[in-house]
Image (cartoon, rainbow, N blue to C red; front, side, top):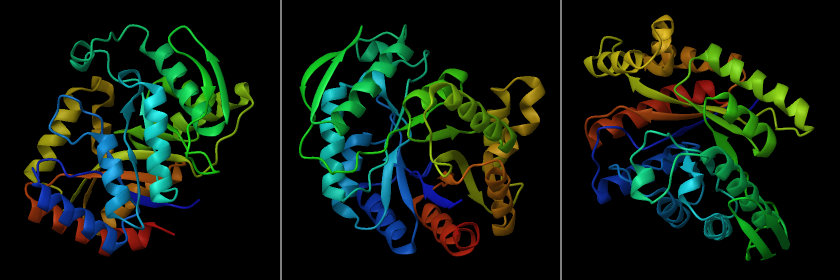
Length: 306
């Protein structure tokens, strides 16, 4: 198992464009494996596909991806063309993760779509996307999408790997049917291990296989005192959204404390079959985000990565 640690832009840092580029350059220089961008159409985050193109131009070593892009919001033909272009320009460093979105999001109304049937639409969109990225000629006829014509060009000989995001049974089955990997989010080690087992069981039904290294988890990061008020408040907010019987496990969704404690947290996930991590630093400023990144790169990554 090859363990790798990536980062998402820090929560709460409110970076300017200059500060964002400085942080990206720092991650590239310090050996961070990858950077990941979420899909929040009405939020304060930058648009993910635009950021993928920017990453292809700005970096030469790091990989990058989405965590996760909401498939029903986007046209799969256009998205396939965008992914193929970015993959060519970055020489194969693109790793998109796709999901179905949350039914309660305001984005549905904002995009003139409905959450009803989003799973089926996502399945068709992902299927068509992968066909366009992997075949010279494509014939697809579904309830939501129809396409007859060429696959996207130019594209690399090795198709873009498409991972699936989501913590539900439907997401596990979608991964088994369509995914090249799985990226969970804010889940403790035991639940992560159960998710992998569920995907592997579903793979047995589909007759497909997924590389054993292609299971990952997104977690919150804060290196420092365990009683940090920022961490305690975040844990309390997370626990409040969970069933009462599961609230004690909210702390397992955070990588916190000293470097050795952070490594131990990650290793508990590794023991359950997770090998790829997207850590989201909780940082109050650009300087704080820089400090968290420097500490992670110097004290945690060399120990946990192999």
